[in-house]
Figure 1 (cartoon, rainbow, N blue to C red):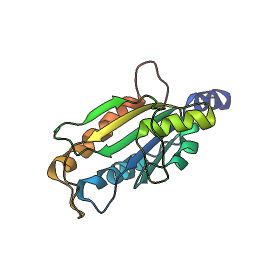
Figure 2: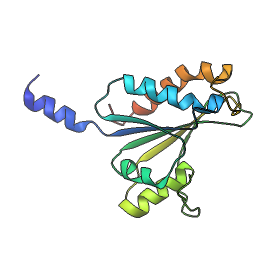
Figure 3: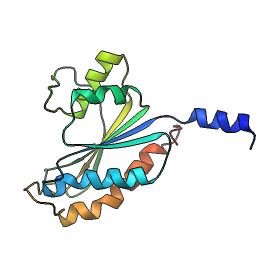
Amino acid sequence: MSCHLAATLKSLRRAILVVAYGSPLHSHDAVGQQVVTEVAAWGMPNMKAIAVHHLTPDLAEPLSMADLAIFVDASTSAAQEIQVRPIGLDNSAIATGHGCEPQVLLAKTQTVYGYHPQSWWVMVPGGNVEPGEVHSPVAEQCVETVLQEIEQLIHQPGQTYA
């Protein structure tokens, strides 16, 4: 492959940001930490994977540089399956310094930077957010499926993220 072609192909890659949030001290709430570790191990140069305890307004800057954002969170709902939803903007809510929902963070990004990335919310079932470092069996089984969901989001038909 010529250097010119390689550079052209590299320039087609878009920036991907995976943000997992939740406390590693609250049982399955920490499942996102494991997902981020696995995603980082993929070694994709155009992908950044970060784990945070809460979504905060300071994440607007890295979001403004992404073409695709994927948020991973442990769900406390009774659902037993992973839920993947597109995220729209929520201009009606206020982002505080102590945490916010992804749609509020995207609205903040849009307001400050005039742009927000296409975004998805991956919610992992499990239900146990009691103090402790043990993932629920449901959440533990979901890690591989979450990784597959992330791969599918990256390789959507008509998109060039990887």
